[in-house]
Length: 75
Image (cartoon, rainbow, N blue to C red; front, side):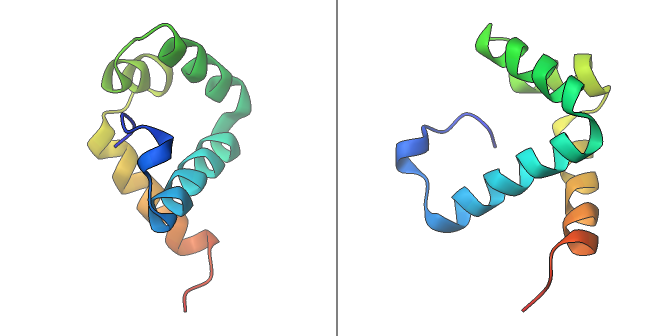
């Protein structure tokens, strides 16, 4: 989910990544900064999410999907 090199992302993957960041910043920008610091320190994403927001990647995805449906217009 978060481990791929940005140079290899497709346009839909870039859009999804943008919405991940948008979601996390909307939830709490301070915690987002904390997450980025942990990821830069090479803490695995699943552990960093748990430490900062108390959620697993699966929980994050479910919350993010619900937020996307409420936030972004559909086609």
